[in-house]
Length: 278
Image (cartoon, rainbow, N blue to C red; front, side):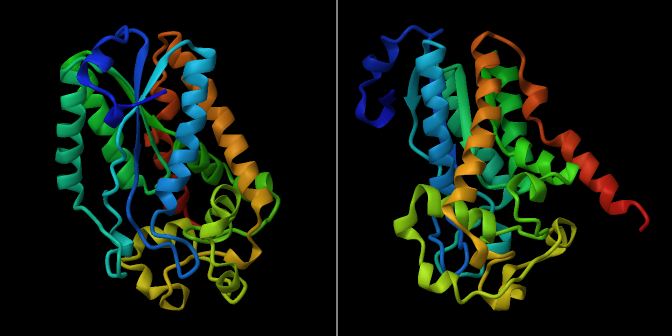
């Protein structure tokens, strides 16, 4: 792995074009309750990107070129909390397209974008931009791994898979707190976590919210943070890293993996569930 910012342009150019793969972390600077850092989504994506780069280099013989992260994306529900930043979707679309056009236009035509902001409009926009770059430059840009946890939610398997059996854990709750306890425990305010009441909300209701100020006692969390532990976080990363790694291996073999990562079919399934009569 080489850091793009630490390299000269000739360092990048010297890597065979078929071997170099840009890896770029994307996520919001967004509040995650009073107990988790604003960089929670970035830290989770960085952990997943680390595992992606291991597969690319150790199994596929690629050279991972780690791009600077993009720290600002749409995060509408958290925009009223101090420190949070939300970019309007249309601006994010255009800004991301400019960035990726620059990389693809100067020869970095293979890229894996890694994000952990499981917000459907954000993911869809990111995937739309990747599709546009691929069409314009003949590139192979992909984005994931949000398809997999969304798929577990849509199938009703999420709670059973992780063993905690509590639906409505949507933001800065049990799972995201567990993830941080696994990857960056020093940044979790454990003394605050134990004081937080349960505040579950359905995925459907979450889609109708305008701000997280209206939920979790106004503290910005949705779910069961007090039940978090590092074991659940390890389970999360092991499951989804394994699923994403399978896609990356296919990508390295030149396969079209787009349908394995697109969230559109999963969103259609969720929308059908929400609109179905009780």
